[in-house]
Image (cartoon, rainbow, N blue to C red; front, side, top):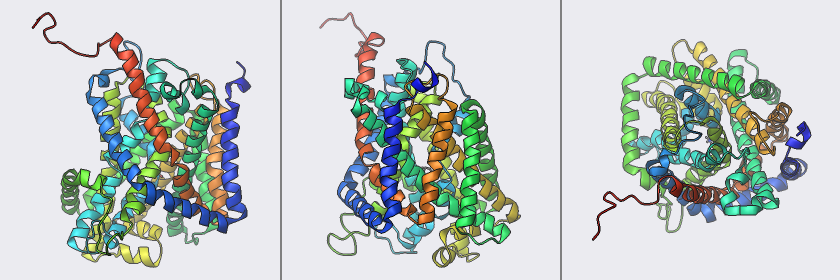
Length: 520
Ligand code: NM2
C-alpha cells in the first residue's frame, strides 16, 4: 500500500468538514453562535444531567466488576508478551496524556470557587463549605473520572492486541454492536463524532492553559497579558508538541512524559515540604475519608431540594459535576486509544486498576497539595487568593499562590514550564491518536505527515477563536458536541462484553464446578 492509500479519506475529510462547519459560523456571526450554543448547552445539562451522572457511576461499577472478574486476567498480547513500557513510564505516559495543564489550573484554584459557592447548601465560607472545597475537586478528578477514561481502552486494546485487528479506531471497537455498519458511513460518523468532541475538549484545555502560561510569563517580564503574548504561547506550545509527536511514541512522547513526571514530583514535593506540611497532611487525609464516606452521595447528588425554594437549584451539579463528566467524556476515546496503545503485555486488570489508582492518586496530590496550600494562605490571612481571583483574574490568583513560596521565582518558573509540558504531552498524544484514527491501517506508528497535520489542526482553531473571542463558545460547543459520546461509551462497553463472551468459553468455560464428578 502506498502512502496515500493508508489514509481513510472519508473520516479525514469528514472531520475537517464538521470542524469548519461548526467553527465558521462562530467566526462569521459570533453573537448568534454564542446564543445557540449556550442554549443547547443548558438544554443538555438540565435535561440529560441525570443521564451523565448515571453514566459516570455506571461506568465505574462496570470497570471495577470487569477488572476483578475472571476477564481481568486476560493478557493483552500473545503468550509471553512483556509490557512494552515499564510501569513508571506507563503511568507517567497515561497521566501526561490524559491530563493537560488544567490540573495545575483547577488544582490550585478550584477550591476557591467551592468556598464561595459550596455544594450541599452549605453556607459560603463556613466550616462545612471549607471541608468540601478541596475534597470536591478531588472527586471531580477521581475514580469516576478515570473510569470514564479507561472504559474505551477495554475494547480497543482487546481488539488491537488480542484479536489483532490492525486498526486503532473507535468504530472498530464498536464492531460487535455495529457489525457490518462499522465499515460504512455509520462507523465513519462514530469516528468523526469522537474527533469533533476531542477537538472541542482540546480547545477548552488550550483556552485555560494559554492565559495561565501568559500570566506566568508576564509575572517575570512585565508584559501585559493579551493577544500578542497568548499567540506566542500557543506557537511555542505547538512547536514543542509537534516535535514530540513527530519523533513518536518511543522518543518525544515518552521523554516528555517522563520530564513531566519529574517536574511534577519536584514541584509537589517542594510545596509539601516547605509549605504547611502538617496542614497539608491533615487536610489530604481528611479529604480521603470524606470522599470515601460520601462517594456515592456525591456521584448521585442531583440537588432536587435546595434552600433557594421548592424546585430551585443552585446549579452546582450542572456547572461542575456534569460539566466535568462531559469534559472527561470528550477526551475519553482519545485517552482510551492511547492507553490501549501503550498497554501491550499487561492484563486487563493491571490496565484498569493502574488507570484508576495512578490517575486518582496523581490528581489527589495536585489538588491536595496545591489546593490546600492556597486554602492555607487564605485562612491564615497571608494572601487572599479569593480577592485576587475576584478582582484581578483566576490566573493571577494561581500564579500569586505559587509566588508565596520561598525562592518563588524558581517555583513560578517550574510551574509555568510544567504547564507548557503538560499541554504539550496532551496535544502530542492527541495528534498521534487523531492520525491513527484517520488511517485504514496503523503499522508501528501512524504516518508522520499525518501526525503533524493534526498537531496543527489541534492548535489552529483555538488560536483563531481566541482572536475572535469565541473560545468560550467553542468550549461549550465541545460539551454539546460530546453528548453523543455517552451513547458511544455505552456501545463500547457492550461491544467489549460481547467480544469477551464470544472468546472466553474457548479458554475458561463459563462456569466453574469444584466437584465436577459428583452427582446428586
Ligand atoms: N480533563 C482531565 O486540559 C486538560 O487537563 C485535559 C481535562 C478532562 C478535565 C483534560
